Image 1 (cartoon, rainbow, N blue to C red):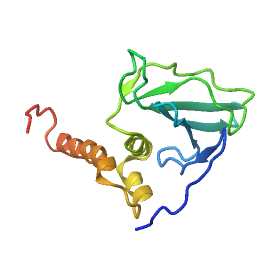
Image 2 (cartoon, one colour):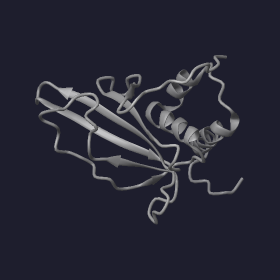
Image 3 (cartoon, rainbow, N blue to C red):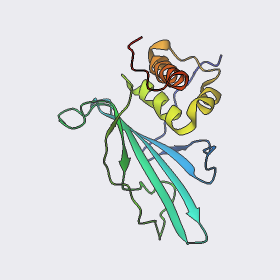
Length: 168
């Protein structure tokens, strides 16, 4: 297993290119972090960009994966929600698609810390196979990955017996 030996300083307004999506490899996923050690809120932004030459448009979709927002009555839980505004970290599209999602709904996500939130983000983008490919060889403490196992376990349970509402 690989050990993390150094910290990475991304600097201000930096992002990480993520692997292409299996379902649509023309989308470029970009991950950026909004983390402040003096503030308990953490925001992981995933922005998906694709240029369509036939329409001379840039397609864009973005999602925020966030810890509970202190002082908010609406977002007092781990959640993911669409984002409307591009950060412009990859490129400014002169013509962007007018089909923006808005910022609702705020969908609850099974997490209890920023690391489990990031693992949930990876699972949501790449599915279980991609998640396993990205995380294989990394030492991830069970306290961070327990919710992934819960999500996958419930998914497998559903596949075996859909609409079974028993509590077992």
